Amino acid sequence: MTYKIEEHKHRFAAWAAGRAASVTGCRFRVEQGKIILERVRLNNLLSTPDNLPSPKDFDTAHRQWRQEIIEVAQEYGLAFTHGVAAKLINIYFKAAFVCGGYYNHTNVQAIHPPIDRKLLDELSKKDVGGLHQVWNVAKRIGWSKFNSDQYETVIQSIRDAIQDNEPLWVVEQYWQGYQ
Image 1 (cartoon, rainbow, N blue to C red):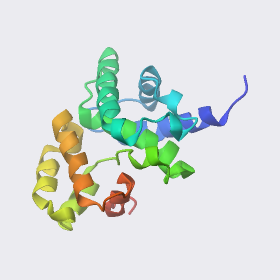
Image 2: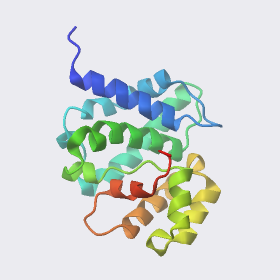
Image 3: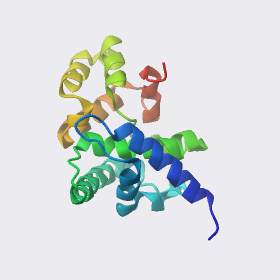
Image 4: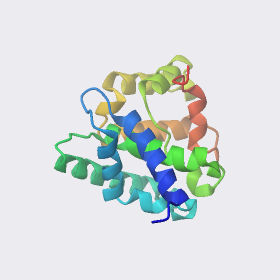
């Protein structure tokens, strides 16, 4: 077997996603996260960002992936929410595409940023987009407990808060988790 860059990228992105999405109340092993991503076939998209849905179709595909991830996780006795499923997807794609050098690709610009408390705290503190109340509501719920509508409200609010035609990843300038 020849070890190819796609497998290498998949392993790293799955590791990062599994570590980031496993939280109190929904703990799982990195290997389980990798298997779930494979069962939903997200690894089949990694060879080129052209495989990703177009920006106009991305939200619909993301919703479907979240639902599939939740269903597959249940087979392993895991109770994923839309927030946890989204974090698994978003970190996976961030590692593979956004930080993998494709950040200017049209399809990559539509990738949802990972949502967590540190991002929501800073968005609220800085009143980004004048949406302090939205960020506070999301913080009170907690990203790992988001249902589909709550998650999608945060993503739409991010779109509302950033400049037109900017990629969604730019909102991560407010993420303080690197400190």
